[in-house]
Amino acid sequence: MHSWMVFCFSSAALLASGKTVFPPPCDSEIYCTGSILHQVQKAKLFDDDKYFVDMKLKVTPDVILMAFHNLSNETPNKTVPRAKLQEFLSVYFEKPGTEFESWTPPDWRDKPKFLGGIADQKLRDWAEKIHNLWKSLGRKIHAGVKYHPELYSQIYVPHPVVVPGGRFREIYYWDSYWVINGLLLSEMTDTAHGMIQNFLHLVNRYGFIPNGGRIYYERRSQPPFLTLMVESYYQATKDKDFLRAALPALEREYQFWMQNRSAAVKVNGTEHVLNRYHVRVGWPRPESYIDDLELAEGLTDDRRDQLWMDLKAGAESGWDFTSRWYRDGDGDGSGTLRETRTSQILPTDLNALLCLNEKTLASFHRMLGDGDSAAPYDQAAARRRGAMESVLWDAERGAWFDYDLMTHSKHLEFYPSNLAPIWAQCYSRPEMGERAVRYLKVYPNYLQRMLNNWHLIWPSAGSRQTGWRT
Image 1 (spheres, rainbow, N blue to C red):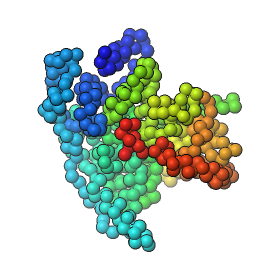
Image 2: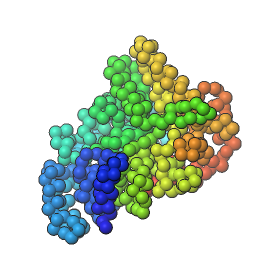
Image 3: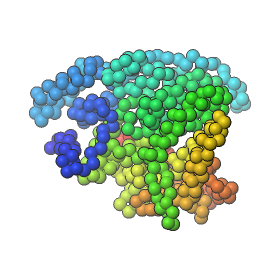
Image 4: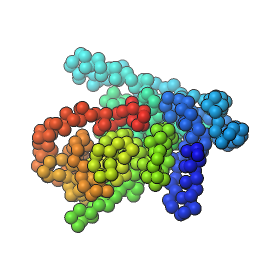
């Protein structure tokens, strides 16, 4: 039986049985679910699954859905031949990229001050080449996206953006933290301000920030760096009015993570609350559709849905993908992508980041003269430090390790994230930092292993077959 029909029938059976039926990645029957998406991706018309879901519609979705319904009714098993699919796309879709206007950041300057501070000529030339990239990575969303959003997978934001580049045509959340710091270094405060305003706009619309600027990312986020983006901008400008206006959205995003991405764990009789990546969408990722579909072949319905949720959670982590999330039947790290269990892991770096967010939110309130509102965030940071030291800290090794909710144990493999609490300054005793330094000295083979296996453990590396970034 056709795999899509099996998927639909099993979903219908779940509805009839009263079992959980997960929401789709978004509400679009073209970009996120449905027979058009399934047949186009199964036909492998493009080298990258993301290409199709970035295409613009030439007419309204209802017209396209009806046209495809009529076309599929003309063929056996409703499966449209590859040539007919290509013809259909040429009639009803445009190539990706029409959602943007050409735009060069007007605050770009030829010689920002930081270049003059680089003594080595080769390094200065390299830095200048990077600075020049701002001109080619700037994007302004076409007004058509605002007035006719039904024709695009692009999410409209009011200000121009700087994108990662390559297959990533749109804005991405956690990538933008480093983009914004680079823009501030290049003295491009207007562009940085506009990007932050876009993220505040997204929080006000969704209650959180989607993974990236496409509707097929609407059910998942990425590491919550918005508070730190605002801090970077404030440090560069000392603009308290901007800080005051941004603060409600920062607090709203923080509440999203605490209400939707947290889990309780009991250690030595004490219950602690820490955070995790967790996306309850049991469908293939539209932008990696065929990869997810093929990866789940042969699994039971429950295991298939869980795998698809955990793949999205892996994408939400920004580490898509890494052996940090692979857990085989015994719960150790010798699994493969098919054994991804992201939602069952309490990540050290996510909790360090949220600890830093809590401390930063407290400092924002104090800067604005509101000590009473700062106190709950101080208390939250203190609770998290205690939870991280009870659940994640390993005194013998001198580092913090991800915690497995299935096996109730730490993952003791080496990853750069093991030292994230040092970066966040989220630990209670100075000797913990000293032990972390010894951890790096005592376990140098871990560092070598990291270098030898960077494609497994470093975020945003790998190949299309796993949905990893290139």
